[in-house]
Each structure stands twice: as structure tokens, then as C-alpha cells.
Image 1 (cartoon, helix red, strand yellow):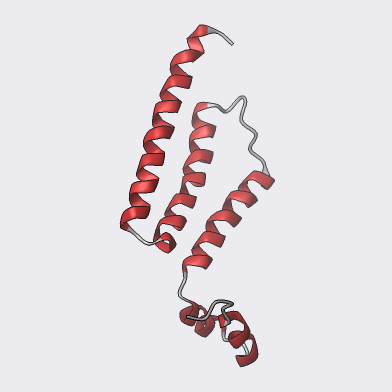
Image 2 (cartoon, rainbow, N blue to C red):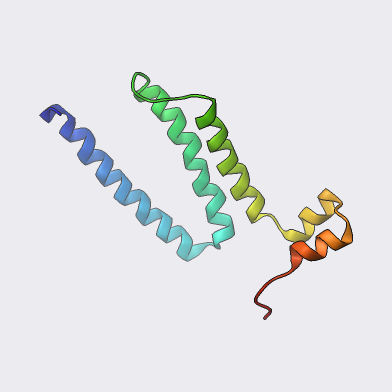
Length: 106
């Protein structure tokens, strides 16, 4: 590597440190179920920016896009209210009861 890459590495290190500070600050203020889907959206921005800045070296194929979409959709599904989701899906009562079961009651 050449010394001309040093500003990129230093700026990325500073920005990562700042972003982690914002993550912990957001977790202190908002519930995890609100923060997690927002954090997963960073994948979308990362894919977009990597194509804009580093198109020659960044691998962008269907597997990467499907993985990012799955992560974002999964975090959104996890954050949904269970009762609303059960009504929307119109699941049988036995499956609804099974999905609502919690190992730690109380």
C-alpha cells in the first residue's frame, strides 16, 4: 500500500468510531426493537456507496443483494408486534400459541 491511502484509512477509522458512538447513544435512548431495523439500513447505504466510490474493487452480485435484503427484512420482522403479525398472517390458533410461547415467564 502507498502512503496516499493513509488519509482514507484514518478518515474511515474516525467515522467508524463516531458511528459506534451514535449506535450506543441510540441504544441508550430508544428500545432495541426500534434501533435494530434502522441499523440494518446501513447495509443499503453501504452497498450504494461502495458502488459509487469503489466500483472497480467491490463485488456486487445477486447473493450480496439478497443477503442485504434478507438482513433488513429480518430485522423489520423481528421488531413487529407479535399480535399484529399474527392477525395479519391469519395463522391457526395452535401455531399462534406456539409462536407466543416464551421460555422465561415473568
